[in-house]
Image 1 (cartoon, one colour):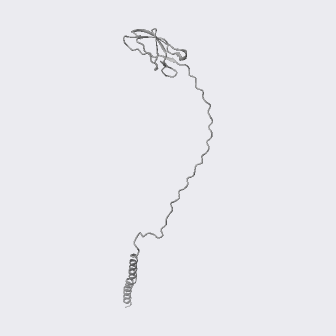
Image 2 (image 1 turned 60 degrees about the vertical axis):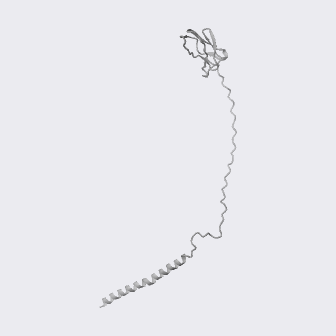
Image 3 (image 1 turned 180 degrees about the horizontal axis):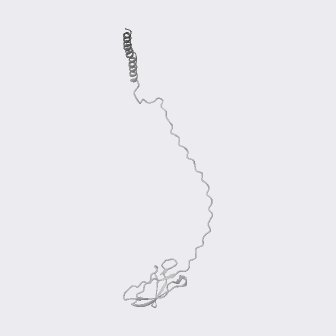
Length: 163
């Protein structure tokens, strides 16, 4: 037994098969063992259960065959549930968002003197002085001798021109 309005199985619906009455179980199924022959199958539906949607029909049973006949009812009309009136939604109050406070930097500790990270600086002074002395020697000793040689060569060429 299936209700055509809901598609749900219907328990407790009476079926008359060849004069014998059986009722459908909780799953809407019914069964009756009969001998081979032709049987009239009809529904007996009470008014509170709805009305029969399947007309009475003749069904032939052969030997020990199992015959399945689907029967349908039209259950009582369902009344729509009353719709509750919608409740007005209150306007939510704006929630002020707290502004995040910036994190303060950790307190900086300044050392009194800077740490020694390189050499002690004494080794650079003698090297710097030696470099300056060599540079001065190069300017004053080497250059004038070249100038003297070039003057000598220039003077010799002038003497040759005068002759």
